Length: 226
Image (cartoon, rainbow, N blue to C red; front, top):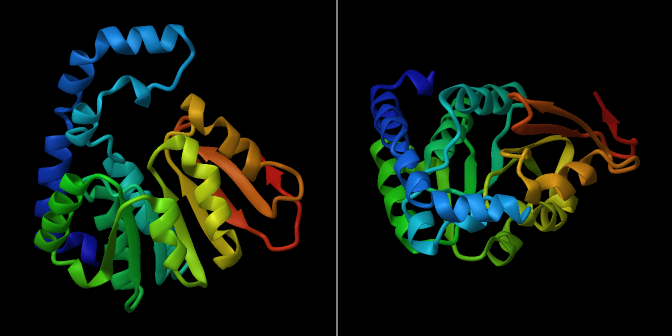
């Protein structure tokens, strides 16, 4: 199993440890965070561009292993990720497609400095061949992705979850999985409503104490929620 490979374990340990430092960034933004929350606005918009450049906001180890297991269970070989950041979730997904016998993770990140660091992290994990990193606006970079797509992971700006899903919807194979992180944030509400809308074609459930929406495309069927 690739997740047990020394290079992968070492890289993920290093990145998860580094991500613990996010609290310092949020502490520095605390006055803005309080003001934003009191006005009912998006939590992510409380961070300045400079702060966002250095923020991991990653999946946890448990969520990462869940991503890996979901991709493996579905035999995913063509994966799309919205929101690379520093590459933590990308590594979990790339490990899964390698263990599926070969495949590719198309991942997109708008911040150039994060792209460079993510590339180095993915290379350190020995998974560069399994990753196609697209730099720029996801609504543009993902237009070139061909189907059928087996799994989509949404973990970028929450207000773009619906537009990204709309962009990829016709490229999803029947039975494809769409996982969306941080759906407990205000800007993700419209996404949850979308995948749970009757007639959307998804069966959907919220996991990890309300943080992640797990949806499976059931082509031609109404949505089922539980």
